[in-house]
Image 1 (cartoon, one colour):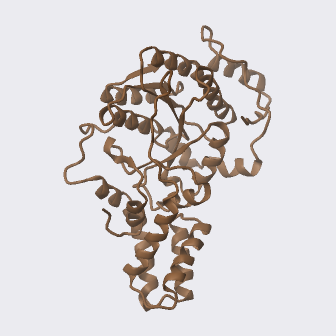
Image 2 (image 1 turned 90 degrees about the vertical axis):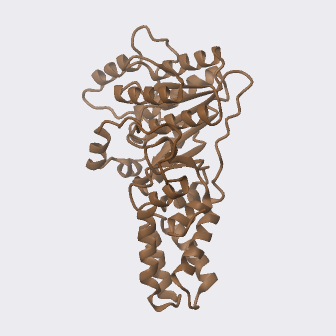
Image 3 (image 1 turned 90 degrees about the horizontal axis):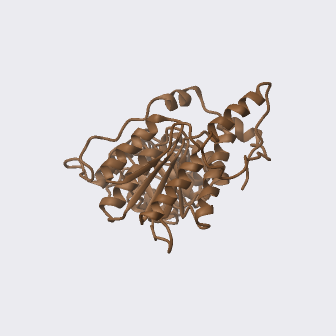
Length: 385
């Protein structure tokens, strides 16, 4: 496990004492000795990961409680494919308009291909993916007359091919002893707690599993309240500690309780953290080690929740969180919030990490299994289904 050396400053001693009181309050079980940070974040990576002023203001907003719509019931006249299409409409609009502007001559020449590559990059597909897709389009239609719909069909086919390698559903196979442990992680405001609640709701109502939630975000009372609301909607037990309690201790106690009462799945929600906060990234690693003391194979799944509006910054999050926790899958949320749906394609091509779920809204039904064909067609403005 790799951690980073905390940078010293004139108030280091006082800060360390305050941190010790926060992470190891009196009366909490001493699960392991204090963490030593024996490595540093690369300076270039740290600069890239520093939050902008707007991101910091966004993170300070209180996370909204779950939608009051009846759990599990889709909005009238709005199935999942319709919501996916609507959610990706901003991205699709940009791509569709870009293709339409390029195809005024109706011949796919070198100039049109160069313009198409720019359009894909603007949709956050990234240069490597854009070049790969354009090469496929070139091989299929170069020098030929082509309609806008024909070009979009080729785009959808190539995007689907890239995405097909990462479309893997979540599988909750209960271990011989104890519950299946699913660890949730991500930056502030990514939708991590909401995603944990939606997964719990799905497992409880659709798969009839006995689920327990663990509120290991011990910094924000609002996060605990939000998870408690989801637990109530899903009919799940929720374990929690006092605000400021040791997150590892909460996870430890939650696992013991879940095992004692025969739960099938334990979903551990952790505090949102920026990737360059070394102490909090180390805390995430500590939670992993605490769970492994209970079950060497735990966590059996670890989902990194990414805000779809983050664009290319999502790449840095995957890299850094993967060093602190055994990330086994990505969940991309808020895809309805910006014209950056291409980032999913870029992540699939670069990392190959499974993407079991995507989200396009706040309701329980707005988080669904990732299907490459539907996503690819919705992204380029073609009919789904």
